[in-house]
Amino acid sequence: MKRLRLYFDTEFTELSKKGKLISLAFVSENDEIFYAEFDDFAAKTCNKWVMENVISNLLFKERETFIKTSGNICYMKDDSGKIANALCNWFSELGNVEIYADCPAFDWVFFCNLFGTAFNIPKEVFYIPFDLATFLKYRGIDPDISRESFVEKHKGQAFIKKIRLKAAGLHNALYDTFLVKAAFEIIETEITGVLI
Ligand SMILES: [Mg+2]
Image (cartoon, rainbow, N blue to C red; front, side):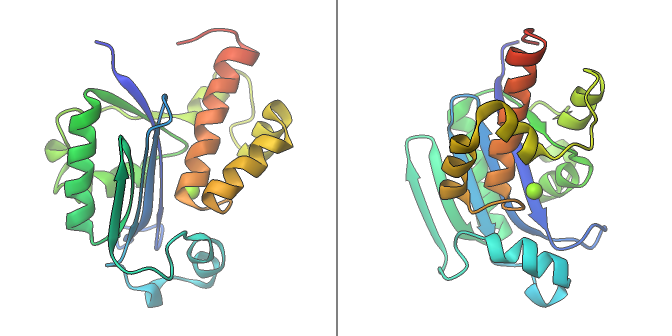
């Protein structure tokens, strides 16, 4: 079955079961975007690193709840329930999708939790997520390389500048998603020459 590729990243308050989503981003292979910031996590539970690296790079820190859609591009800030609903609508517009992320062990659990359990994720979403780290390792590339340096080396500084303008920088979920998408594309087309 042909499924549209969606690249994915989230930011969350802590690397534990108690973590809450701060933001979430999907970018499709056709550059359709869903980016959401949550307003129902407690900022006071965030440690210094998260405050300095994640919260500081949010795009809508100063904004109240909103949703802005244009075609299949959606930006919003709201609580988890509203974001889950908007995501359901977005997936239903796109049709069947499969998800590609960096190291999504935590991200995927938080994503599933948005819908209650892994059995309740929207029907369009393939239940197996794919990850960049394994993809790098099996192509003989260190899975711990800096994604930003890797992408900059292959796509140039202008590309990094362009995505920074759209999405702040590292540890912004949308920025990281742009990097994941670029990294997959580089490996598939420039390095191995093989599209999977
Ligand atoms: Mg990230």
